[in-house]
Length: 374
Image 1: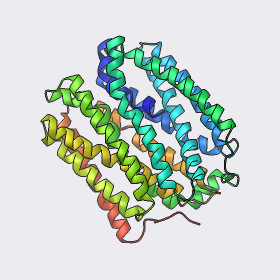
Image 2: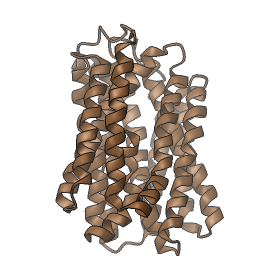
Image 3: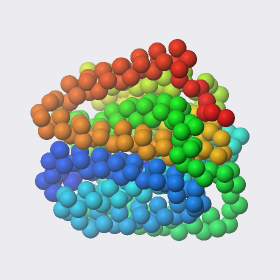
């Protein structure tokens, strides 16, 4: 699922070469994947009041298989946009159902469990540049999508077999009022949406055009994919460590610390040009941004009561993704206006500074919730 969301980052240049698509179109393609991931999240919250988590996950696997196969069989940019949206939709359904299920399977240590789930997800992101490079050696950019379609079909079957042999907890049986849950938990949901949504919007715009940016400062596409892989690779230990820290540290100060470090990385990025400095910064940046996801998931899923968990988490997922999704379209559009990458990154960094100061002021004033309402 995560591979399907990030695979277009290393594929942007091969798709451009094969189809002649513009920066704006390619930015829209990456954005539609994330809009697709956002669109079903709130409906999934309602769906989970009617079906089991396992049934929702099965449906998401079928959608991913179909969407990826559709993209793999087309070269028209408009059809690629449609297929990318379907791929994103599958991931949105999956993440709401799966993260909720994981937190309910391990209620005594949700951070550790969600961190482990995140590690598995991030390994796919780390593999994306290598998978694309290998596919380009033996075939073309569509070869990557064909491989993902096959993998999606196989893993959906495997999950279904395991799910039928598993006794799932009854934790979500009382969660039957989506709007009531969101209304009761709006303060913690809004805090999480703003924090992760705006931060991830910057990250989304950055990583999808990271290889393109690196080619403008003298690196080859292959080297750019390597540096992107370093950034994604740092997310593997980030999920593991941050998940465990999230069970131990105060949630809001920990999230604000992560936001501050990531903001510094964005502002520093345009000043670096060498391979090793960029690799080091990419590692810190990748570790930091991926730390925020288990931190916020634990903040929510670790404190939301059973009767609100899936519904409130779905509202967070929908809001966060809708804020995040335009990142690539914004960067692509600005590039289409001939605005240089350094100016774009400096503007995005300035926006994160403003966000950090607002959240810090609210926290010091005691207006940010530390936990969900009981």
